[in-house]
Image 1 (tube, rainbow, N blue to C red):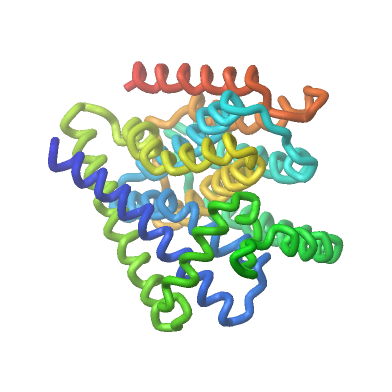
Image 2 (cartoon, rainbow, N blue to C red; image 1 turned 30 degrees about the vertical axis):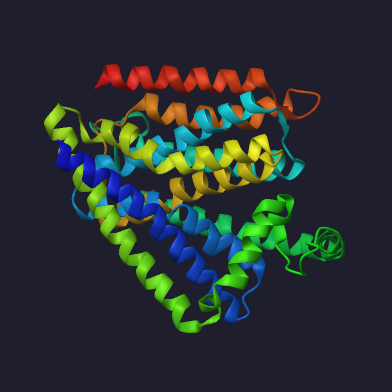
Length: 356
């Protein structure tokens, strides 16, 4: 048991480190090829933030543990949507932007419903077991491609109106110590300061070979970490009599999502909840569509231990996150809203543990 726990913890650590290395290296390479910040943000950074979940999901499929693959994604998304956003609301009420209300949150709901329809074959197809087959995986990937196309198209339409405002904001928020431009990071002076120090201290960041080294090292860490997480979680499940689906929904999903909780809570306390919400929503969309879609292409994801309650909790969380702010005059996430979400997550976890 101790051996399996160590493997699980080390695997989770490698996943986080590997995702950071891959993202940093890929962003550096993309900039050298003059790829726009828009494309980098929508692809490299977004995919890098969901890399741990995606790697565990695909590794589980390759090792013929499909319940762990789909359980990790659903568990991680439920953790982010209910507990993380709930704690953010309890920490500090915050307003949901118009773009988030009418564009991103509806897309999140569509992605969650698509995963429900693809995975709950007992309900929708009258099958004896829930399974995400290869045709459903292709459907999810197609929805993801449409999502990426839509986001790029929408952002390009807004880019011309934002250029002047962005330039002015950047000039006004530049650090007195230098002229480093930090983009979103300028919302927090300490983040911008850290970025400036990194650029001054680390001359290796400017070398092409170092960027590729980061990508290779990060990918290696992701592969090794994914294997260790799957092996450790499976070992724990066998020894304590838990199903692989339950381990994925709880231990693995929470372990991979804990960085989101820390980052989002910090952002909420500093008044930047909108940024944290955008990261959470984007990660959940990519998880539901791309991670499950790619894994289903490897092997049909049979999920006997993943049932109606899991899917409806995921879809219900996405629906409530969209609808609740629309019902308030301030269009905001209140403490009452956050409290409801935290209680829903606790109730879901109690049900999951009792179900076994």
